[in-house]
Length: 486
Image (cartoon, rainbow, N blue to C red; front, top):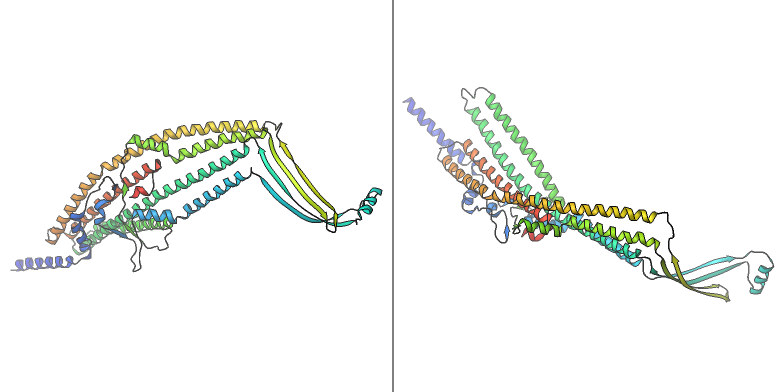
């Protein structure tokens, strides 16, 4: 009789335990969403328009980084990129520098044009010279020793020949302006890639934190079980100590991950210049499908490479410097003119009008081999630049091939990861059903949940690597623009 009573009591306690756990927050976590995802979750898709995180966002549509009742901006990857391009301070400053350099090239162009200056003044003249001639002059003109005098007139200058120096300097200024434009474009493309990296990393870190939270809960449940159900093995405290140590390790890892995520958030806020530090990331990261073959990307990279364009501009500048150095030994011819009206304030009969006109010729005869030395240095510098261009072309071919093969390898893993995710879903749903029927323990269910989250994390990781591999290919071929993001 006592034996039957004990069996009945054990069954009752087990049933009550199951009833209590049905309301457990851990067990209810994302349950409805997981069931819905069984039919909504799709694989990574590539079509003629774009590739993206596809149906994964149906698992968890957003990453909410802060809870607040105020309106929180919701960023897709495309919106984040647009905001960064519009608000980033460094990008704005680079644009202003380009405008400044453009005006500088205009000023250089104006230095070799006709110049006209107006001059006027008033001063006191003093003639205290002694001698018979000075006395006669003062008496005839009825002048005092001190007289007030004023003048006005125009001076003009028109450069005619300068050996090509001014044109060379103007063209160099325009090339410098092109260099600034290339630097602006490089920063712009690198900014788009960096925002993409941070966007994806924040999402991955959030998933990683979710895994750790489940592991923490599993460790806590394990500690509780060991403390409440002592056996011959668990009476020895080493098992409990191991579980508590594992628990604290997971807590420490969670702290590190949250700090890492915070650093990523701060960089995201800085790059986008967000006034509101609360934001939501939507798992919508569509990117353009790559249709080009390896040879096509290599051709585009050689044609569009910004680094290659910079070196070519440097070579053009050095060619123009040759004209500048040679112009020193060529004659410079300027037309100059001057007209002046001058009078004493109280003596109109002594007015003077002066008109001058002519040409100035200037050229260097001997400068101690300075110009020749500069030409030799510039010629050697040009040879170095040419060798850099050749080496860069070779490096571009190698880099494009390496990045393209990496992209293909990552892309080939998508279907494998997709099958793992589908299997993990099936195992999770089976474990949920078995747990509700009392066939598996709560700790075992948590293990399955952890494995499912790890599979999702792996799926996100592959998608992140695929998207970033595309960014590298678009970046090296200078095709990274808003059209890449849908």
